[in-house]
Length: 239
Image (cartoon, rainbow, N blue to C red; front, side, top):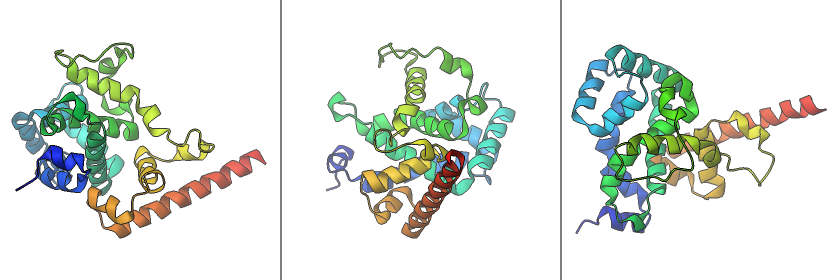
């Protein structure tokens, strides 16, 4: 008998959960696939509320020209390969934020919450001023309480994620001087966190992010070289 999503989550079998949502994630890949037409993306928006929410937060008016411009900007910034990594990373982040005590079915939670986590990941890497309607962010109040029944719950969820993004990704604070780490993207920081803090193997990370394990090892070495170069630069600046 097939295990439920909740049972898989209880055993932290994220790999199997990702497998079951492969088709779901494939629709997001289509948004940022340079070979997909903007018309196809608009069609996905019309058929899927979660896709519509994602595109809505990455544009001002959701006009076809703006959707096209947004897609080209993101594709040029990340490239297809790295964007696919961001899509899987955001899915793992979504699972990490799930709270079984709230008694919300995991499938419903993923469909409702994933668009906001993915948008936050993109914004951390590309910058909110380039992609988002600033008016949606300016009214955020960190003292408010999140109301699940509010009509504005999707706006609030996204603003909350963006407001906390700096805290989420300054994970080296208290461990060592974090100045060299400022040169890393949030994706690169997350990869180091998985390897050195969560102690996950290259194979395990690659499986969740749909990459060959050698690609993870190569990316880790690139990040370490990037850090070493930045440390040398800082050393020259100081001395």
